[in-house]
Length: 154
Image 1 (tube, rainbow, N blue to C red):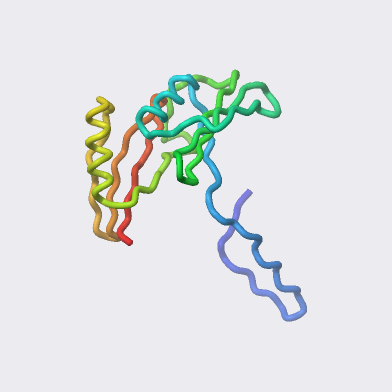
Image 2: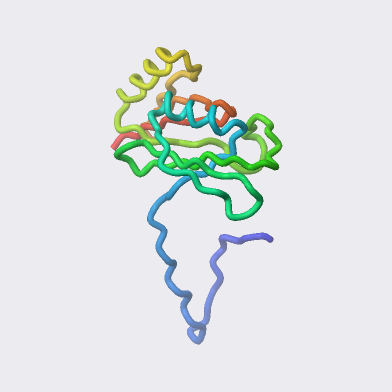
C-alpha cells in the first residue's frame, strides 16, 4: 500500500471530509523483552518505575507487566511472548528505533548521568544541540533498547 501526502482537489459537489477524530497523546508503549523479570528490575532500579498490574495477552499466550513512573503519565508495557525470537534489540530492523522520555531541565540530564554512573549503568554522553535547543542522554535497557532522556528548551 502506498500513501500519498499530496492533497487531492475536490469539486464543490463533493462532501468535505469529516474532521479528524481526537488524539490526545501517547497512552503507553509496549516493549517485547527477552527476560521480563530482568527488564522489570532494570526499569525499577534505574528509572524508578513500578508495577501497576499484569495482564494476560488475549491471544497467543504470554502476558504484559505494566509499569509506571509515579506521579507521571509515563506507562510502559513489558511484554512476554512465548514465541519471541529472544534476539537482542537492533534498531536497524523495521519497527521501534528508540524510546524517548522527557526530563524537565538540562540539569536533570546531569543528574541522570550522575545516577547512572553511581549505579554502574553504561550510557552515552550528553549531547547538547542548538537548533532547536535541546539535549539528550542515551542509555540502553537489558535488551539493548535505547532509552533517550530528552530535554528541550521551553
